[in-house]
Image (cartoon, rainbow, N blue to C red; front, side, top):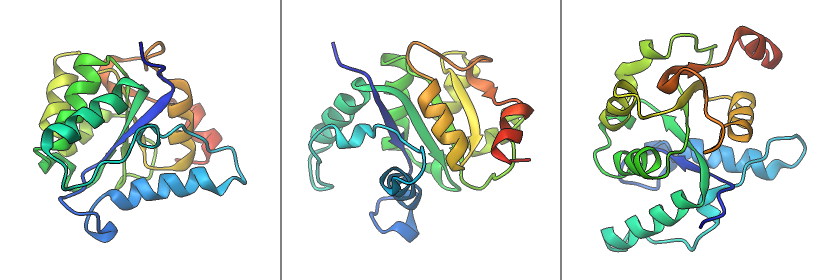
Amino acid sequence: MAYRNGTYIAFHANGTNVPYNSDIKYYNLIKAWCGKGDDCFSIVNSHDKTAAVRDTSSKETLKRSLRERLNNSKNMLLIIGETTKFDNDWVPFEIEYAVDVCRMPLIIAYVDYQIAIRNPRALSDTWPPALKYRIENGSARAIHIPFKKEPINDACGQFTHNNYPKNGGLGYYNDQAYNLWGIR
């Protein structure tokens, strides 16, 4: 049995590791927040818990590594950018495995949405098909948040495979939480 204490971070790499061409820049920002050390932002990054694989590795080697990371995770942070819904490779695989096999909650952070999210369904046009399918069939348990440090930190610390967001796949924070973070 895996020790599930990490947060698995999924994002659309857009076939590149060049930050300005993909959502890897948001992943790198989260790593910078973790490394800063002068505030209370802290997550255990599941990608740091296993050996790195190279882009030139076989697809099965990559899948095996991703499954191992997901198996050791308590939740998944899914970064939704403008191209995420077009990913037909790794993001769908990660969502499917996280929800269908690991039964972990999804923390869905929208990079282009910086205000309080009160109606997640209104953002469904940004969802990858694998996510949309699981929200609609009720198998996904998710909270939808703007890509901001405070809600990401709170959600990653709060929601686990033993503690799911309310409202199934359409969870969101209340006004009191957003007011506390200074988000309107």
